[in-house]
Length: 216
Image (cartoon, rainbow, N blue to C red; front, side, top):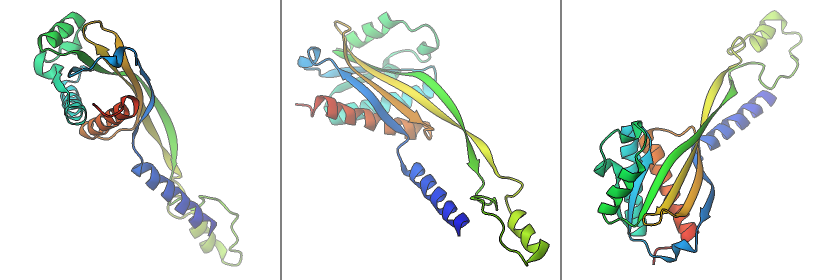
């Protein structure tokens, strides 16, 4: 009974972990003095050399900013040559293009750090999981072997590597390059790029509503 109870607890925890969001906001900062100005248009730059990921994240962020904040939005994927982030980023080119488009703010998103951790995953079929001394006296070798040598006895579990990504988003005033808003977040073993992008975009825009309130 003790073995079965332990397995039920582990299964429940795994289910909860699978259902929980893989990303979370860990902190944010607002320059309320500078934000007294009303902003109407935004240029989005996701700083990654992976062009496919860049396109997806920028489009999702643009869609969220447009629908939730009513902003006119442009992305670097649309108006800058593909692969420009593989080289040294030319900030003057980015700023000049954003100004040409009539933007008054710029949003940058960048991966600032990555960590890995190794966890041992117990094999749920291991017969000695939640070990209790064998009490089947009188049942001989066959009973003992079934108890201690059943499925999983020679395979107690395995190591799994989990990844944590640290992401920072910053919004700057385009004319003065003053930092207006900064948000730090973590992504723990995110799923596919489209899933991670959609989740991040919604998370970021929800934080806008929390930090800045609904758009007037």
